[in-house]
Length: 444
Image (cartoon, rainbow, N blue to C red; front, side, top):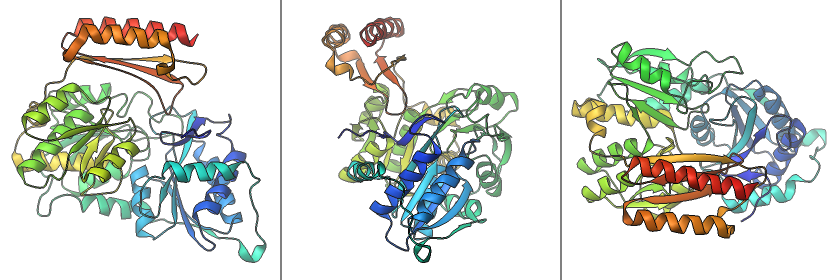
């Protein structure tokens, strides 16, 4: 289904450029209210730490209140926390102002329904059908009201702590926590400390412009250096809105979403709590598939995007899914991807097994994988190009059954992602560069 504004994860773009303007945000709120919020309904609005969040918060608040909805303003809070509190407050809609892992110059708007789930394609299309209309303003007797909720962080923090096994603590663990100078900068360190861990925070001093800048799950180099330097047991890195996580083992090695998925799946299988297949994406490492198969665990691939992983889990009855980037979904604990809750589940496995993170991840051997992002001026589908398709077929003939090639247009950035993986790292790297050059030539 083709949509003009909604991408893989809500509406996103450069601040000040359509659609990320205050005027559009007000129209989007009005449209969402007409589609999803009955008269007298309630909307929650949360945000990350970008300086532009104040502007969009005010614009969305105005749009919803003018359309007759009551608004609860949560302030900075991880995206999954807004999903949780949307259910807790029995709200009709949860709204997140965030561009996730993007730099501060970008921002975005995404929604959760009353069940704490992301909207379907059909509902997003219905909102788009309304968004070109002027923002509605009802008469004064029908206007909504707005107020701030000062307990949002503590409520979400309590929810996260409740997912940790009863009777278990984090005492004895030294943890370096990287909050990406984003929405999890307070709740992450405090939740871990309350469970008994010794916490060393980095990336927890947001100024509105340093979100994801040289820190967080997309830039974990500092964390990887810090963990062994201070003798920590583990490092945890969230992204700007807290729905992604990567971890660092005690030796300073990065443990990505595929490896975390392996640890979660095998631990739940051993305890008899694993249900249905494990769901990854077309970008998940082939090593994950092979490692799970060796443990007799069914593995399935969905399209890229945690919403599609979630759909596949619900259709198949699974409870564990995720992406290489660290979007991890643990449905026996919450309704959407949650970096902090995933990290807590991994920490619980470490404590229960007595094994370090390096050993837990060691059962999965990652295949060499190279990703090249080709920036394009206009949206394009690489499958529509005969030249690109021919090059891919020729490369696949060389790899045969020992590797994979995936080309896809990003849903959040103007890039074509070229991924090649196989057993030979040099071959994989060269093949990715060659395919990326062809894509760049076709894209102009």
